Image (cartoon, rainbow, N blue to C red; front, side, top):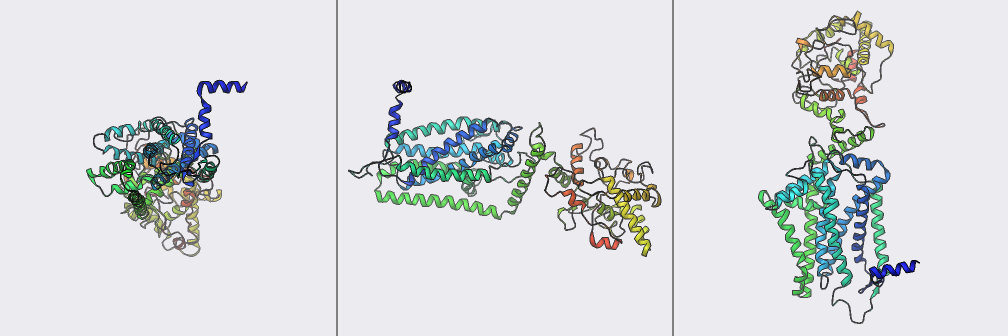
Length: 637
Protein backbone atom coordinates (compact mmCIF):
# COMPACT_ATOMS: atom_id res chain seq x y z
CA UNK A 1 0.00 0.00 0.00
CA UNK A 2 2.75 2.43 0.97
CA UNK A 3 4.76 1.57 -2.12
CA UNK A 4 1.79 2.43 -4.29
CA UNK A 5 1.34 5.72 -2.40
CA UNK A 6 5.03 6.57 -2.85
CA UNK A 7 4.84 5.73 -6.55
CA UNK A 8 1.77 7.93 -6.95
CA UNK A 9 3.45 10.79 -5.05
CA UNK A 10 6.61 10.46 -7.14
CA UNK A 11 4.54 10.41 -10.35
CA UNK A 12 2.91 13.67 -9.34
CA UNK A 13 5.91 15.48 -7.78
CA UNK A 14 9.09 13.72 -8.96
CA UNK A 15 10.43 13.83 -5.38
CA UNK A 16 12.70 10.82 -5.94
CA UNK A 17 14.83 12.78 -8.39
CA UNK A 18 15.31 15.56 -5.83
CA UNK A 19 16.19 13.13 -3.04
CA UNK A 20 18.50 11.27 -5.37
CA UNK A 21 20.48 14.42 -6.09
CA UNK A 22 20.83 15.01 -2.36
CA UNK A 23 21.87 11.43 -1.67
CA UNK A 24 24.50 11.45 -4.41
CA UNK A 25 25.83 14.90 -3.64
CA UNK A 26 29.63 15.08 -3.70
CA UNK A 27 32.42 17.29 -2.40
CA UNK A 28 34.76 17.70 -5.39
CA UNK A 29 37.67 19.07 -3.36
CA UNK A 30 37.09 16.80 -0.38
CA UNK A 31 35.42 17.51 2.99
CA UNK A 32 36.47 20.72 4.73
CA UNK A 33 35.86 22.30 8.10
CA UNK A 34 35.54 25.60 6.28
CA UNK A 35 32.20 24.48 4.85
CA UNK A 36 30.66 23.98 8.31
CA UNK A 37 29.72 27.62 9.15
CA UNK A 38 27.35 27.79 6.18
CA UNK A 39 25.53 24.61 7.25
CA UNK A 40 25.38 25.81 10.85
CA UNK A 41 23.88 29.09 9.61
CA UNK A 42 21.14 27.24 7.76
CA UNK A 43 20.19 25.19 10.81
CA UNK A 44 20.28 28.21 13.08
CA UNK A 45 17.92 29.95 10.70
CA UNK A 46 15.53 27.00 11.01
CA UNK A 47 15.84 27.18 14.81
CA UNK A 48 15.16 30.93 14.74
CA UNK A 49 11.98 30.38 12.72
CA UNK A 50 10.73 27.54 14.95
CA UNK A 51 11.42 29.35 18.24
CA UNK A 52 10.00 32.56 16.76
CA UNK A 53 6.74 30.80 15.89
CA UNK A 54 6.54 29.39 19.41
CA UNK A 55 7.08 32.85 20.93
CA UNK A 56 4.39 34.32 18.68
CA UNK A 57 1.83 32.13 20.45
CA UNK A 58 2.15 34.29 23.60
CA UNK A 59 3.68 37.59 22.46
CA UNK A 60 1.46 40.67 22.10
CA UNK A 61 2.89 43.65 20.15
CA UNK A 62 1.71 46.86 21.79
CA UNK A 63 3.14 49.46 24.14
CA UNK A 64 0.89 48.20 26.95
CA UNK A 65 1.35 44.46 26.40
CA UNK A 66 4.78 43.78 24.82
CA UNK A 67 6.86 43.80 28.00
CA UNK A 68 4.09 42.11 29.97
CA UNK A 69 3.80 39.24 27.46
CA UNK A 70 7.58 38.73 27.39
CA UNK A 71 7.66 38.73 31.19
CA UNK A 72 4.89 36.11 31.11
CA UNK A 73 7.03 33.99 28.78
CA UNK A 74 9.97 34.34 31.17
CA UNK A 75 7.86 33.06 34.07
CA UNK A 76 7.86 29.57 32.57
CA UNK A 77 11.16 27.66 32.44
CA UNK A 78 10.43 26.31 28.97
CA UNK A 79 9.37 29.75 27.73
CA UNK A 80 12.52 31.39 29.12
CA UNK A 81 14.64 28.67 27.51
CA UNK A 82 12.97 29.08 24.11
CA UNK A 83 13.40 32.84 24.26
CA UNK A 84 17.04 32.37 25.28
CA UNK A 85 17.63 30.04 22.31
CA UNK A 86 16.00 32.57 20.00
CA UNK A 87 18.14 35.42 21.37
CA UNK A 88 21.53 33.70 21.39
CA UNK A 89 20.96 31.92 18.07
CA UNK A 90 20.48 35.36 16.47
CA UNK A 91 23.80 36.52 17.92
CA UNK A 92 25.48 33.33 16.70
CA UNK A 93 24.09 33.80 13.20
CA UNK A 94 25.72 37.21 12.86
CA UNK A 95 29.07 35.83 14.06
CA UNK A 96 28.86 32.84 11.71
CA UNK A 97 27.86 35.06 8.82
CA UNK A 98 31.01 37.11 9.33
CA UNK A 99 33.16 33.94 9.48
CA UNK A 100 31.48 32.55 6.37
CA UNK A 101 32.01 35.73 4.33
CA UNK A 102 35.68 35.85 5.40
CA UNK A 103 36.18 32.21 4.39
CA UNK A 104 34.59 32.69 0.96
CA UNK A 105 36.60 35.84 0.28
CA UNK A 106 39.86 34.27 1.47
CA UNK A 107 39.46 31.16 -0.69
CA UNK A 108 38.04 33.09 -3.68
CA UNK A 109 34.98 30.84 -3.60
CA UNK A 110 33.08 33.55 -5.47
CA UNK A 111 34.63 32.64 -8.82
CA UNK A 112 32.63 31.22 -11.71
CA UNK A 113 30.18 29.67 -11.65
CA UNK A 114 29.42 30.79 -8.07
CA UNK A 115 28.97 34.51 -8.69
CA UNK A 116 25.27 34.42 -7.77
CA UNK A 117 26.04 32.40 -4.65
CA UNK A 118 28.45 35.14 -3.60
CA UNK A 119 26.04 37.96 -4.45
CA UNK A 120 23.05 36.43 -2.66
CA UNK A 121 25.20 35.58 0.36
CA UNK A 122 26.46 39.15 0.63
CA UNK A 123 22.93 40.54 0.35
CA UNK A 124 21.68 38.08 2.97
CA UNK A 125 24.03 39.40 5.63
CA UNK A 126 22.60 42.96 5.91
CA UNK A 127 19.10 41.50 5.68
CA UNK A 128 19.78 39.17 8.59
CA UNK A 129 21.24 42.06 10.59
CA UNK A 130 18.14 44.17 9.89
CA UNK A 131 16.00 41.15 10.83
CA UNK A 132 17.77 41.04 14.19
CA UNK A 133 17.46 44.82 14.66
CA UNK A 134 13.70 44.70 14.17
CA UNK A 135 13.45 41.96 16.81
CA UNK A 136 15.51 43.63 19.57
CA UNK A 137 12.89 46.24 20.59
CA UNK A 138 9.93 43.82 20.54
CA UNK A 139 10.35 43.11 24.25
CA UNK A 140 9.28 46.72 24.89
CA UNK A 141 12.29 47.56 27.08
CA UNK A 142 14.04 50.87 27.66
CA UNK A 143 17.16 49.70 25.82
CA UNK A 144 15.31 48.20 22.87
CA UNK A 145 13.13 51.25 22.27
CA UNK A 146 15.97 53.73 22.73
CA UNK A 147 18.13 51.76 20.29
CA UNK A 148 15.47 51.68 17.60
CA UNK A 149 14.84 55.41 18.10
CA UNK A 150 18.54 56.15 17.46
CA UNK A 151 18.56 53.83 14.44
CA UNK A 152 15.36 55.46 13.16
CA UNK A 153 16.94 58.90 13.46
CA UNK A 154 19.98 57.68 11.51
CA UNK A 155 17.70 56.41 8.76
CA UNK A 156 15.71 59.64 8.79
CA UNK A 157 18.88 61.65 8.08
CA UNK A 158 19.39 59.81 4.77
CA UNK A 159 18.65 62.10 1.79
CA UNK A 160 15.42 61.53 -0.17
CA UNK A 161 14.46 58.06 1.09
CA UNK A 162 15.38 58.61 4.77
CA UNK A 163 12.01 59.86 6.07
CA UNK A 164 10.17 57.10 4.19
CA UNK A 165 12.44 54.40 5.65
CA UNK A 166 12.07 55.93 9.11
CA UNK A 167 8.27 55.82 8.92
CA UNK A 168 8.43 52.22 7.71
CA UNK A 169 10.70 51.26 10.58
CA UNK A 170 9.15 53.04 13.59
CA UNK A 171 5.79 54.28 12.29
CA UNK A 172 6.61 58.00 12.27
CA UNK A 173 9.29 60.56 12.96
CA UNK A 174 9.71 59.28 16.53
CA UNK A 175 9.02 56.18 18.58
CA UNK A 176 5.34 55.89 19.49
CA UNK A 177 2.35 53.56 19.68
CA UNK A 178 2.81 52.34 16.09
CA UNK A 179 6.48 51.46 16.54
CA UNK A 180 6.00 47.94 17.89
CA UNK A 181 3.30 47.21 15.30
CA UNK A 182 5.62 48.21 12.46
CA UNK A 183 8.56 46.31 13.94
CA UNK A 184 6.44 43.20 14.46
CA UNK A 185 5.30 43.32 10.83
CA UNK A 186 8.88 43.71 9.65
CA UNK A 187 10.23 41.00 11.96
CA UNK A 188 7.67 38.25 11.39
CA UNK A 189 6.37 39.27 7.97
CA UNK A 190 8.49 41.22 5.52
CA UNK A 191 12.02 40.29 6.63
CA UNK A 192 11.40 36.49 6.71
CA UNK A 193 9.95 36.67 3.20
CA UNK A 194 12.95 38.61 1.88
CA UNK A 195 15.53 36.46 3.68
CA UNK A 196 13.96 33.12 2.79
CA UNK A 197 13.42 34.14 -0.85
CA UNK A 198 17.03 35.18 -1.25
CA UNK A 199 18.16 32.07 0.65
CA UNK A 200 16.20 29.87 -1.75
CA UNK A 201 18.11 31.38 -4.69
CA UNK A 202 21.38 30.98 -2.76
CA UNK A 203 20.81 27.28 -2.02
CA UNK A 204 19.50 26.59 -5.53
CA UNK A 205 22.70 28.00 -7.01
CA UNK A 206 24.84 25.90 -4.66
CA UNK A 207 23.04 22.69 -5.63
CA UNK A 208 23.13 23.63 -9.29
CA UNK A 209 26.87 24.35 -9.45
CA UNK A 210 28.30 22.46 -6.49
CA UNK A 211 30.81 23.67 -3.92
CA UNK A 212 33.88 24.21 -6.11
CA UNK A 213 34.80 26.88 -8.59
CA UNK A 214 35.85 26.08 -12.15
CA UNK A 215 39.49 25.25 -12.81
CA UNK A 216 40.23 24.25 -9.20
CA UNK A 217 39.70 20.45 -9.46
CA UNK A 218 42.68 18.56 -10.92
CA UNK A 219 41.97 16.35 -13.95
CA UNK A 220 41.29 12.75 -13.04
CA UNK A 221 40.54 13.48 -9.37
CA UNK A 222 37.65 11.60 -7.79
CA UNK A 223 34.91 13.45 -5.95
CA UNK A 224 34.10 12.42 -2.36
CA UNK A 225 30.50 11.80 -1.28
CA UNK A 226 29.04 14.52 0.89
CA UNK A 227 27.58 11.99 3.31
CA UNK A 228 29.10 11.02 5.68
CA UNK A 229 32.44 12.73 4.98
CA UNK A 230 31.29 16.35 5.14
CA UNK A 231 28.15 15.65 7.16
CA UNK A 232 30.07 14.42 10.19
CA UNK A 233 32.09 17.65 10.26
CA UNK A 234 28.91 19.70 9.97
CA UNK A 235 27.28 17.84 12.85
CA UNK A 236 30.31 18.22 15.14
CA UNK A 237 30.45 21.99 14.65
CA UNK A 238 26.66 22.37 14.85
CA UNK A 239 26.55 20.36 18.07
CA UNK A 240 29.21 22.57 19.64
CA UNK A 241 27.36 25.72 18.59
CA UNK A 242 23.96 24.47 19.78
CA UNK A 243 25.48 23.28 23.04
CA UNK A 244 26.93 26.74 23.68
CA UNK A 245 23.62 28.42 22.81
CA UNK A 246 21.65 26.04 25.05
CA UNK A 247 24.09 26.61 27.93
CA UNK A 248 23.77 30.39 27.64
CA UNK A 249 19.98 30.15 27.32
CA UNK A 250 19.78 28.07 30.51
CA UNK A 251 22.37 29.84 32.65
CA UNK A 252 22.09 33.45 31.51
CA UNK A 253 18.88 33.72 29.53
CA UNK A 254 17.79 36.50 27.23
CA UNK A 255 17.88 39.94 28.88
CA UNK A 256 14.69 41.70 29.93
CA UNK A 257 15.42 45.27 30.98
CA UNK A 258 13.02 47.73 32.55
CA UNK A 259 9.88 48.47 30.51
CA UNK A 260 10.10 51.43 28.15
CA UNK A 261 9.30 54.70 29.87
CA UNK A 262 10.24 58.20 28.65
CA UNK A 263 10.78 59.30 32.27
CA UNK A 264 13.71 56.88 32.64
CA UNK A 265 16.96 58.53 31.59
CA UNK A 266 19.21 56.19 29.63
CA UNK A 267 22.30 56.63 27.48
CA UNK A 268 21.58 54.46 24.40
CA UNK A 269 24.18 52.28 22.73
CA UNK A 270 23.72 49.99 19.70
CA UNK A 271 24.23 46.23 19.72
CA UNK A 272 27.83 45.02 19.72
CA UNK A 273 27.87 44.33 15.98
CA UNK A 274 26.98 47.98 15.27
CA UNK A 275 29.47 49.61 17.63
CA UNK A 276 31.92 50.12 14.74
CA UNK A 277 29.31 52.17 12.87
CA UNK A 278 28.46 54.08 16.04
CA UNK A 279 32.14 54.97 16.43
CA UNK A 280 32.52 55.84 12.76
CA UNK A 281 29.69 58.36 13.05
CA UNK A 282 31.84 60.35 15.45
CA UNK A 283 34.22 61.24 12.63
CA UNK A 284 31.43 62.80 10.55
CA UNK A 285 29.29 65.55 12.06
CA UNK A 286 26.13 67.28 10.91
CA UNK A 287 25.01 66.59 7.36
CA UNK A 288 28.21 64.62 6.75
CA UNK A 289 26.99 61.86 9.10
CA UNK A 290 25.26 60.22 6.15
CA UNK A 291 28.72 59.38 4.79
CA UNK A 292 29.35 57.08 7.75
CA UNK A 293 25.89 55.61 8.02
CA UNK A 294 24.96 55.19 4.35
CA UNK A 295 27.67 56.03 1.82
CA UNK A 296 30.54 53.97 3.27
CA UNK A 297 28.46 50.81 4.03
CA UNK A 298 26.86 50.84 0.57
CA UNK A 299 30.22 51.48 -1.11
CA UNK A 300 31.80 48.55 0.75
CA UNK A 301 28.89 46.27 -0.19
CA UNK A 302 29.04 47.27 -3.87
CA UNK A 303 32.81 46.78 -3.95
CA UNK A 304 32.47 43.27 -2.53
CA UNK A 305 29.68 42.46 -5.01
CA UNK A 306 32.07 43.41 -7.82
CA UNK A 307 34.87 41.15 -6.54
CA UNK A 308 34.16 38.34 -9.05
CA UNK A 309 34.47 40.83 -11.93
CA UNK A 310 37.66 42.35 -10.51
CA UNK A 311 39.13 38.91 -9.88
CA UNK A 312 38.61 37.88 -13.51
CA UNK A 313 40.54 40.92 -14.74
CA UNK A 314 43.45 40.64 -12.32
CA UNK A 315 46.32 38.16 -12.33
CA UNK A 316 45.85 35.50 -9.65
CA UNK A 317 48.76 36.75 -7.45
CA UNK A 318 47.43 40.32 -7.58
CA UNK A 319 43.93 39.10 -6.75
CA UNK A 320 45.30 37.16 -3.78
CA UNK A 321 47.10 40.28 -2.50
CA UNK A 322 43.94 42.36 -2.96
CA UNK A 323 41.82 39.86 -1.04
CA UNK A 324 44.40 39.74 1.75
CA UNK A 325 44.43 43.53 1.99
CA UNK A 326 40.62 43.63 2.04
CA UNK A 327 40.41 41.04 4.82
CA UNK A 328 43.15 42.52 6.97
CA UNK A 329 41.93 46.08 6.40
CA UNK A 330 38.26 45.25 6.89
CA UNK A 331 38.70 43.09 9.97
CA UNK A 332 41.24 45.53 11.39
CA UNK A 333 38.97 48.54 10.84
CA UNK A 334 35.96 46.77 12.36
CA UNK A 335 38.01 45.61 15.36
CA UNK A 336 39.66 48.97 15.94
CA UNK A 337 36.43 50.98 15.70
CA UNK A 338 34.61 48.50 17.93
CA UNK A 339 37.42 48.56 20.48
CA UNK A 340 37.53 52.35 20.48
CA UNK A 341 33.81 52.48 21.22
CA UNK A 342 34.06 49.88 23.99
CA UNK A 343 37.13 51.50 25.53
CA UNK A 344 35.44 54.90 25.61
CA UNK A 345 32.33 53.41 27.21
CA UNK A 346 34.38 51.63 29.89
CA UNK A 347 35.89 54.99 30.85
CA UNK A 348 32.62 56.94 30.68
CA UNK A 349 31.47 57.24 34.30
CA UNK A 350 28.14 58.76 33.29
CA UNK A 351 27.42 55.82 30.99
CA UNK A 352 28.50 53.27 33.60
CA UNK A 353 26.27 54.95 36.20
CA UNK A 354 23.41 54.93 33.70
CA UNK A 355 23.89 51.21 33.07
CA UNK A 356 24.05 50.44 36.78
CA UNK A 357 20.92 52.48 37.42
CA UNK A 358 19.09 50.77 34.56
CA UNK A 359 20.16 47.35 35.84
CA UNK A 360 18.68 48.11 39.25
CA UNK A 361 15.48 49.40 37.66
CA UNK A 362 15.25 46.26 35.52
CA UNK A 363 15.65 43.98 38.53
CA UNK A 364 13.08 46.05 40.42
CA UNK A 365 10.57 45.95 37.55
CA UNK A 366 10.79 42.16 37.36
CA UNK A 367 10.41 41.87 41.15
CA UNK A 368 7.27 44.00 41.05
CA UNK A 369 5.86 42.14 38.07
CA UNK A 370 6.51 38.82 39.82
CA UNK A 371 4.75 39.98 42.98
CA UNK A 372 1.96 42.15 41.55
CA UNK A 373 -0.15 41.77 38.46
CA UNK A 374 0.86 44.21 35.73
CA UNK A 375 -1.60 47.14 35.72
CA UNK A 376 -3.93 47.55 32.78
CA UNK A 377 -2.31 50.89 31.90
CA UNK A 378 0.90 49.04 31.07
CA UNK A 379 4.17 47.80 32.60
CA UNK A 380 5.70 51.31 32.81
CA UNK A 381 3.32 51.97 35.71
CA UNK A 382 5.11 49.29 37.76
CA UNK A 383 8.03 51.61 38.40
CA UNK A 384 6.00 54.82 38.21
CA UNK A 385 3.85 53.62 41.13
CA UNK A 386 6.74 52.12 43.10
CA UNK A 387 7.80 54.19 46.11
CA UNK A 388 11.31 52.73 46.11
CA UNK A 389 11.84 53.84 42.50
CA UNK A 390 9.69 56.91 42.07
CA UNK A 391 9.95 58.31 45.60
CA UNK A 392 13.59 59.47 45.44
CA UNK A 393 13.03 60.98 41.98
CA UNK A 394 10.12 63.07 43.25
CA UNK A 395 11.97 63.94 46.46
CA UNK A 396 15.04 65.11 44.56
CA UNK A 397 12.91 67.23 42.24
CA UNK A 398 10.54 68.81 44.76
CA UNK A 399 12.11 68.50 48.21
CA UNK A 400 15.91 68.42 47.87
CA UNK A 401 16.23 72.16 47.34
CA UNK A 402 15.84 72.40 51.13
CA UNK A 403 15.96 68.89 52.58
CA UNK A 404 18.61 66.20 52.43
CA UNK A 405 17.92 62.50 52.76
CA UNK A 406 21.35 61.14 53.60
CA UNK A 407 22.76 58.88 56.29
CA UNK A 408 25.58 59.75 58.68
CA UNK A 409 28.19 58.85 56.03
CA UNK A 410 26.64 61.26 53.53
CA UNK A 411 25.24 58.56 51.26
CA UNK A 412 21.90 59.49 49.74
CA UNK A 413 20.36 62.69 48.45
CA UNK A 414 22.21 65.75 49.73
CA UNK A 415 20.76 69.23 49.28
CA UNK A 416 23.24 71.69 47.76
CA UNK A 417 22.20 74.35 50.28
CA UNK A 418 20.28 72.59 53.04
CA UNK A 419 17.89 74.89 54.83
CA UNK A 420 15.61 72.33 56.45
CA UNK A 421 16.00 69.06 58.36
CA UNK A 422 17.59 65.93 56.94
CA UNK A 423 14.75 63.44 56.49
CA UNK A 424 16.74 60.22 56.55
CA UNK A 425 15.26 57.78 59.07
CA UNK A 426 12.10 59.84 59.52
CA UNK A 427 9.71 58.40 62.08
CA UNK A 428 12.10 55.87 63.60
CA UNK A 429 12.83 55.80 67.32
CA UNK A 430 16.46 56.75 66.69
CA UNK A 431 15.82 60.07 64.96
CA UNK A 432 12.90 60.96 67.24
CA UNK A 433 15.38 60.53 70.08
CA UNK A 434 17.56 63.08 68.28
CA UNK A 435 14.70 65.58 68.38
CA UNK A 436 14.59 65.11 72.14
CA UNK A 437 18.36 65.58 72.47
CA UNK A 438 19.41 69.14 73.44
CA UNK A 439 22.72 68.75 71.64
CA UNK A 440 21.10 67.74 68.35
CA UNK A 441 17.74 69.45 68.01
CA UNK A 442 19.29 72.82 67.21
CA UNK A 443 21.88 71.33 64.85
CA UNK A 444 21.93 71.55 61.05
CA UNK A 445 20.39 68.10 60.66
CA UNK A 446 17.29 69.17 62.58
CA UNK A 447 15.97 72.69 63.16
CA UNK A 448 19.27 74.57 62.99
CA UNK A 449 18.61 76.01 59.51
CA UNK A 450 14.94 76.82 60.11
CA UNK A 451 12.98 79.50 61.94
CA UNK A 452 12.34 76.90 64.64
CA UNK A 453 15.98 77.09 65.75
CA UNK A 454 14.88 79.84 68.11
CA UNK A 455 11.42 78.39 68.66
CA UNK A 456 9.61 76.99 71.66
CA UNK A 457 10.40 73.34 70.86
CA UNK A 458 14.17 73.80 70.79
CA UNK A 459 14.07 76.02 73.84
CA UNK A 460 11.89 73.56 75.78
CA UNK A 461 14.25 70.63 75.15
CA UNK A 462 17.38 72.64 75.95
CA UNK A 463 15.82 74.08 79.13
CA UNK A 464 14.61 70.67 80.26
CA UNK A 465 18.19 69.35 80.34
CA UNK A 466 19.83 72.54 81.53
CA UNK A 467 21.61 71.93 84.86
CA UNK A 468 20.23 68.39 85.24
CA UNK A 469 22.86 65.92 86.46
CA UNK A 470 23.36 62.51 88.06
CA UNK A 471 20.26 60.41 88.71
CA UNK A 472 17.97 63.21 87.56
CA UNK A 473 19.72 63.20 84.15
CA UNK A 474 19.39 59.43 83.91
CA UNK A 475 15.68 59.67 84.77
CA UNK A 476 15.04 62.44 82.22
CA UNK A 477 16.98 60.55 79.53
CA UNK A 478 14.90 57.44 80.22
CA UNK A 479 11.71 59.48 79.98
CA UNK A 480 12.77 60.89 76.61
CA UNK A 481 13.51 57.36 75.40
CA UNK A 482 9.99 56.31 76.39
CA UNK A 483 8.54 59.32 74.56
CA UNK A 484 10.55 58.36 71.46
CA UNK A 485 9.24 54.79 71.72
CA UNK A 486 5.64 56.05 72.02
CA UNK A 487 5.95 58.38 69.00
CA UNK A 488 7.67 55.65 66.95
CA UNK A 489 4.71 53.42 67.77
CA UNK A 490 2.41 56.09 66.29
CA UNK A 491 4.52 56.01 63.11
CA UNK A 492 4.71 52.20 62.75
CA UNK A 493 7.62 52.42 60.31
CA UNK A 494 7.94 49.14 58.33
CA UNK A 495 10.89 47.04 59.43
CA UNK A 496 11.20 48.91 62.73
CA UNK A 497 10.68 46.84 65.86
CA UNK A 498 7.91 48.19 68.08
CA UNK A 499 8.77 49.08 71.66
CA UNK A 500 7.29 47.31 74.64
CA UNK A 501 3.73 48.05 75.66
CA UNK A 502 4.99 49.36 78.99
CA UNK A 503 7.33 51.88 77.33
CA UNK A 504 4.61 53.02 74.92
CA UNK A 505 2.11 53.52 77.72
CA UNK A 506 4.69 55.34 79.83
CA UNK A 507 5.65 57.58 76.92
CA UNK A 508 2.03 58.53 76.20
CA UNK A 509 1.48 59.32 79.87
CA UNK A 510 4.61 61.47 79.98
CA UNK A 511 3.51 63.48 76.92
CA UNK A 512 -0.06 64.00 78.09
CA UNK A 513 0.73 64.65 81.75
CA UNK A 514 4.17 65.08 83.32
CA UNK A 515 6.13 66.63 80.44
CA UNK A 516 3.24 68.82 79.31
CA UNK A 517 3.61 68.13 75.59
CA UNK A 518 -0.19 68.36 75.27
CA UNK A 519 0.02 72.06 76.11
CA UNK A 520 1.02 72.64 72.49
CA UNK A 521 0.38 69.33 70.72
CA UNK A 522 -2.73 67.21 70.37
CA UNK A 523 -2.34 63.50 71.11
CA UNK A 524 -5.46 61.40 70.91
CA UNK A 525 -8.19 63.06 72.93
CA UNK A 526 -5.74 65.23 74.85
CA UNK A 527 -4.79 68.73 73.76
CA UNK A 528 -5.99 71.06 71.01
CA UNK A 529 -5.02 71.74 67.40
CA UNK A 530 -3.48 74.96 66.20
CA UNK A 531 -0.31 75.50 68.24
CA UNK A 532 1.97 72.69 66.98
CA UNK A 533 1.70 69.51 64.90
CA UNK A 534 -0.83 66.90 65.93
CA UNK A 535 0.98 63.86 67.34
CA UNK A 536 -1.97 61.53 66.81
CA UNK A 537 -0.76 58.96 64.27
CA UNK A 538 2.49 60.92 64.09
CA UNK A 539 4.65 60.03 61.04
CA UNK A 540 2.18 57.35 59.98
CA UNK A 541 1.44 57.05 56.27
CA UNK A 542 -1.81 59.00 56.44
CA UNK A 543 -0.28 61.66 58.73
CA UNK A 544 2.70 62.19 56.44
CA UNK A 545 0.63 62.29 53.23
CA UNK A 546 -1.65 64.93 54.71
CA UNK A 547 1.28 66.89 56.12
CA UNK A 548 3.16 66.99 52.80
CA UNK A 549 -0.10 67.86 51.08
CA UNK A 550 -0.86 70.85 53.30
CA UNK A 551 1.60 71.71 56.12
CA UNK A 552 -0.33 74.95 56.69
CA UNK A 553 -3.38 73.04 57.88
CA UNK A 554 -4.26 73.64 61.53
CA UNK A 555 -3.46 70.01 62.27
CA UNK A 556 0.18 70.74 61.50
CA UNK A 557 1.89 74.14 61.45
CA UNK A 558 -0.90 76.49 60.56
CA UNK A 559 0.33 80.07 60.44
CA UNK A 560 3.70 79.05 61.89
CA UNK A 561 4.70 77.10 58.78
CA UNK A 562 8.31 77.79 57.74
CA UNK A 563 8.43 78.10 53.92
CA UNK A 564 7.19 74.58 53.15
CA UNK A 565 4.67 74.73 50.26
CA UNK A 566 1.37 72.87 50.15
CA UNK A 567 2.01 70.21 47.51
CA UNK A 568 -1.55 68.82 47.45
CA UNK A 569 -3.90 70.92 49.60
CA UNK A 570 -6.94 68.95 48.45
CA UNK A 571 -6.28 65.22 48.24
CA UNK A 572 -9.57 64.74 46.38
CA UNK A 573 -8.47 67.08 43.59
CA UNK A 574 -5.35 65.89 41.70
CA UNK A 575 -4.85 69.37 40.19
CA UNK A 576 -5.13 71.35 43.41
CA UNK A 577 -1.35 71.55 43.92
CA UNK A 578 1.97 71.02 42.15
CA UNK A 579 1.88 67.29 42.98
CA UNK A 580 -0.90 64.77 42.59
CA UNK A 581 -2.09 62.83 45.65
CA UNK A 582 -0.44 59.74 44.13
CA UNK A 583 2.95 61.48 43.93
CA UNK A 584 2.60 62.76 47.49
CA UNK A 585 1.86 59.22 48.66
CA UNK A 586 4.94 57.93 46.83
CA UNK A 587 7.15 60.50 48.58
CA UNK A 588 5.60 59.64 51.94
CA UNK A 589 6.06 55.90 51.40
CA UNK A 590 9.66 56.37 50.34
CA UNK A 591 10.53 58.55 53.34
CA UNK A 592 8.98 55.89 55.57
CA UNK A 593 10.70 53.05 53.70
CA UNK A 594 7.27 51.57 53.01
CA UNK A 595 7.47 49.49 49.83
CA UNK A 596 7.43 45.90 48.65
CA UNK A 597 10.80 44.19 48.97
CA UNK A 598 11.69 40.73 47.71
CA UNK A 599 12.08 38.32 50.58
CA UNK A 600 15.72 37.88 51.51
CA UNK A 601 16.88 41.22 50.07
CA UNK A 602 17.96 44.24 52.07
CA UNK A 603 15.10 46.45 53.20
CA UNK A 604 15.74 50.17 53.20
CA UNK A 605 13.08 50.73 55.83
CA UNK A 606 14.99 48.51 58.21
CA UNK A 607 18.23 50.30 57.42
CA UNK A 608 16.63 53.67 58.17
CA UNK A 609 15.31 52.39 61.47
CA UNK A 610 18.57 50.93 62.68
CA UNK A 611 20.41 54.12 63.63
CA UNK A 612 21.51 53.80 67.27
CA UNK A 613 19.18 55.29 69.89
CA UNK A 614 20.31 57.49 72.79
CA UNK A 615 21.87 55.63 75.68
CA UNK A 616 22.24 56.91 79.23
CA UNK A 617 22.92 60.56 78.43
CA UNK A 618 22.46 62.86 75.44
CA UNK A 619 26.24 63.11 75.19
CA UNK A 620 26.57 59.35 74.91
CA UNK A 621 23.86 59.29 72.28
CA UNK A 622 25.75 61.92 70.33
CA UNK A 623 28.77 59.64 70.07
CA UNK A 624 26.78 56.67 68.79
CA UNK A 625 24.20 58.38 66.61
CA UNK A 626 25.86 61.36 65.04
CA UNK A 627 23.56 63.87 63.44
CA UNK A 628 20.42 61.78 62.83
CA UNK A 629 17.87 63.70 60.74
CA UNK A 630 14.33 64.81 61.51
CA UNK A 631 11.29 66.06 59.58
CA UNK A 632 10.91 69.84 59.27
CA UNK A 633 7.32 69.75 60.37
CA UNK A 634 8.07 67.92 63.57
CA UNK A 635 8.11 70.54 66.27
CA UNK A 636 6.53 68.03 68.60
CA UNK A 637 6.85 66.85 72.20
